[in-house]
Image (cartoon, rainbow, N blue to C red; front, side, top):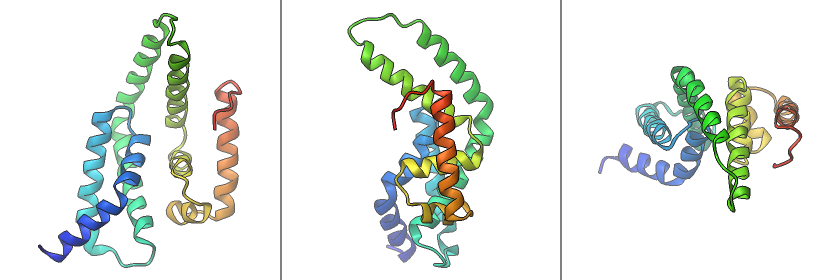
Length: 171
């Protein structure tokens, strides 16, 4: 097996879950998530020989994944807006039954996802990394802002999300 293939397989094995979660944060359905995941793998493969080692390999992979999701979101923004409207209409037709709590939780998570999708590109990237439990220092490296700015932005985004979500506290 070629050395590049060995390195690639190990990178994917080590980072599979992270990459997939980033893709899921930035896609509205499983099929889009899988397509986005495949595109990230293609981009990692194509860029592998260009990795200079200036940062941790996980940071480099995050950047590729995030840049791929930005491109994906630009191309899919109109389609997502239509899908969000449809999901909201469908959700309003659900009848109350013994699964009420589950339905409410799913609605909340969908609304949170919708609200995150409305954030600016940078804010969306920051929140996806925060949800991945990436530290402020690494987020700063990935996004290209200061660590203090990451903390301020994270706080402001959380406060704004709380307001738009009606004060619900589901961190």
